Length: 181
Ligand SMILES: [Fe+2]
Ligand SMILES: [Fe+2]
Image 1 (cartoon, rainbow, N blue to C red):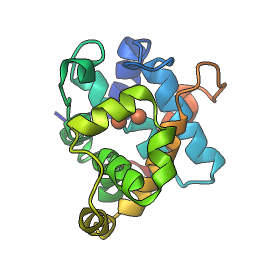
Image 2 (spheres, helix red, strand yellow):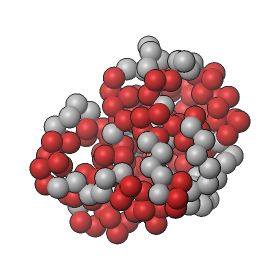
Image 3 (cartoon, rainbow, N blue to C red):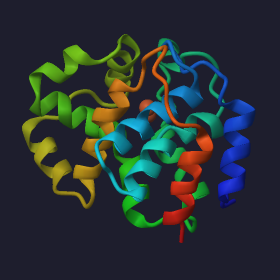
């Protein structure tokens, strides 16, 4: 079940050109832009790699075009985990696992965040359980590596530009290799 770095490359090569549901970027562009924003913020190898792979679940679990329009929460934040366990450490997996809850947290704690979300992100937010209450937000941020997930989420939400240049996949796979177990 576990993937290695070459499998991840193959997956992006096979399916990376698919449109990111409801956004003006492909899956690969979204992954590269998120990782690049992490890199520009001087994040370490683990967090840059989490940024690159945070939506890998979309590539592993085919749900068709824009599942949120059909009322489907694809649970992509969990889907990739069994494939990545053994290849990467707990912190990286947590950042991926909680990048959706991090959106629920950011909307609860920064009123301007909801307004900055894309239409598809707002639609999926409802399916994903909606904005956290104050108590839920507090419980979330106390989880291990929740701060990393929040950081990742801020890059994630900015990584939807149709024409932002990034380093190539090979550059980020090299960083992934460096932090693999
Ligand atoms: Fe996601
Ligand atoms: Fe994303």
